[in-house]
Amino acid sequence: MVAIPGGVFTMGTDEPEIWQDGEGPARRVRLNGFYMDQHEVSNEDFERFVNSSVIFVDDGKIHTKAYPFLMDHPVLHVSWNDAVAFCTWAGKRLPTEAEWEYSCRGGLENRLFPWGNKLQPKGQHYANIWQGVFPSNNTAEDGYKGTAPVTAFPPNGYGLYNIVGNVWEWTSDWWAALVTISPFSLQSYCYRYRCAARSQNTPDSSASNLGFRCAADALPERQ
Image (cartoon, rainbow, N blue to C red):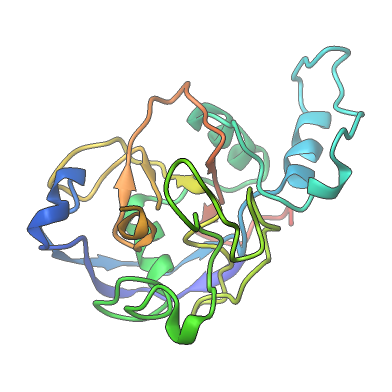
C-alpha cells in the first residue's frame, strides 16, 4: 500500500456540461492521511481471497485458470458487496469517493487527469482507455483491447497505477448528486477518464469494466 498524505483539495467540477454526473459544485475538501493500494485488486489477489474464504464456487475452490495470462489483470464482475468482503478479509476497506479522487489527482491541483490536462501529452499513452469510435470500434492504440495488467502504464504522483482507465473502481459511499458521496467512482468518452468523473450502480451489481482497490487508515497485518 502507498501512504497518501492528508491535505485539502478541490473536489468535483464547476463545468456545467458535465454536471449531469453530479460532480458539481467544486468544493474544498480536507482529508486525513490514509493508505491506498498501489494498484487495482488483480485476479490473482481475488483468487487467494476466494480460496481462503467460506465461499462456494462449484467444489469450493477456484483451481482452473482458463486464462492464466490474465492473473495480473484487474478482477472484474465484482459487486460492491464482493469488494467490501475482500477488503474486510484483507484488513482494509473501500476508499471514500473523496479519498479516491484525492489519490487520483496525485498531488496536482485543478487538473483533468492524474498527469495534467492533456489526455495524451506528446502523443504518449498514460492509461488504458478506449481508442477509436466508442462503443463500436476499439483500435487498441495503447496496446490493450481489453484490460491491462494492474501495473501497466506510469504511476501518478502518489505512485498509484491505473487510477484512471483500465476499469472503474468502487468506493464506499452511496451515490448522491451535488454532494461529496457516491457508490462508485471511476472513468465522447474522454471526459469519463478524468479524476472527477463518477458513476453509479447498485451494491449487488457487477460489470465487465468494474473493479476496485482498497484503502486503509493504517497498514494492515495482511500484505
